Length: 143
Image (tube, rainbow, N blue to C red; front, top):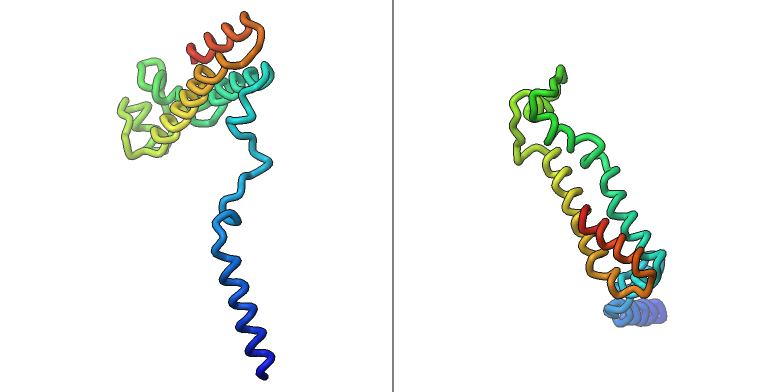
């Protein structure tokens, strides 16, 4: 009985002293690339520009909600949808700030802007072909 108490006390003391180490909680994910290693080669610059373009394929940007927020508000569009949120876009020509579609659209557009800004900041420091670098920077500036 005395041995069990001493063992339990020693084990709990050991657990308390090792659980307070902050390095165990803040580990770097080795599977995720960081900005310190990413912006090195021409291939990295190409991948970054393609990441900006990939933002256009997201459901809320040019795939669907972009059309509701732009062309859907003109006389060229109509709807028979029973969805009251889409009716706000298409029939009444209003965009509600509380509608989730607006939040999705703006979040994804600002994500594209962030990616383009990353290209504009980091690609000039990459040692690569000058004409290709100029092209990548122009594409990011356009997007």
